[in-house]
Structure formats: structure tokens, C-alpha cells
Amino acid sequence: MSLSEHYLEDDLHPIDIVEHLAAHNEWEFERLADDQISMAVEGQWRTYSITLAWSGGDETLRMICSFDMDPPSDKISALHEGLNLVNDQCWAGSFSFWDAQKLMVYKYGLVLAGGNIASPEQIDTMINAAVMSAERYYPAFQLMVWTDKTAKQSMQIAIAEAYGRA
Image (cartoon, rainbow, N blue to C red):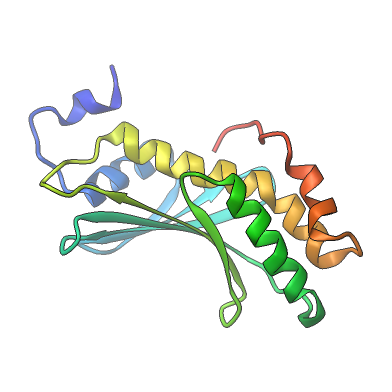
């Protein structure tokens, strides 16, 4: 039975679907509000904090996947150069570094304008794509900020996609 078949008779809120997916995958989660949920998803390199929020005004399901990163101040420019290289390879989302919070963040928004409804498969794919991207580029980010390798050299480690399960 597909994930969607559980929802055929109900027109569920996107965050209700996320909550069901989190429970199904046994991820730690907390429903922060009717329109927002936060969860912890275990990856190979670390546990990622993922927050999804529904914005009814622009009919967008926003996702942020983050992990702590506190690079030395002299490596911030190398990290920014690396972010440009990484984002050139990401088609479904983008990374940014939030210096004040010391967080690396992968962001994605699923636009559902016109009253469209997100399917469980779409949401599951969003979450898995975020974790896969974070897993793929995490080693490169680490090399950029903790070694003398350039951003371009560090990216060589991210050529192959990460394998495993989120």
C-alpha cells in the first residue's frame, strides 16, 4: 500500500502528513504549532534537525534541515565560496550558513498554489532529499573549514552521492 492510500478519504493538513511520516519512521518530533513541526533525523554523519512549516498565505510548505557548524572566523570566506559551489549542484534546494546561530541550513519550499495538496510521497521525498544533500556535502564542508584544502579541492569528496537511509 502506498503512502497516499492512507489519505485518500481525508484532506489532511500538510503538517499532519509530516507528523504521520515522522511517527512511521520513528523520528523524534515535536508539533510546535498547528502549522509547524520539528524532528530529528539520524544520518550517517550526524543527526539533522528538520523543521517544516506551512505558510497558508503563499501556499508553501517550507522545510529547513540544519546542523551545527562553528567554523573558525578565518575560514568563513572559504565556506562561502564552497556554498556557491555546492548550490550550483543542488537543483531542489539550497544551503546557507547562518553565522549568528552557527548553523548550516538546507532550505526548500514546496509551492502548492491553487489549492493543491502535498502527497505523502512528495513530503517524504523532500525530507529524504534534504538528508541526502546534507550527508553528501557534510564532509566537504568539514574539509573547507577544518583543513587547508580550498573549497574546490574539498568538493572532490562530494562527487558521489551518499548512500544509506535517512
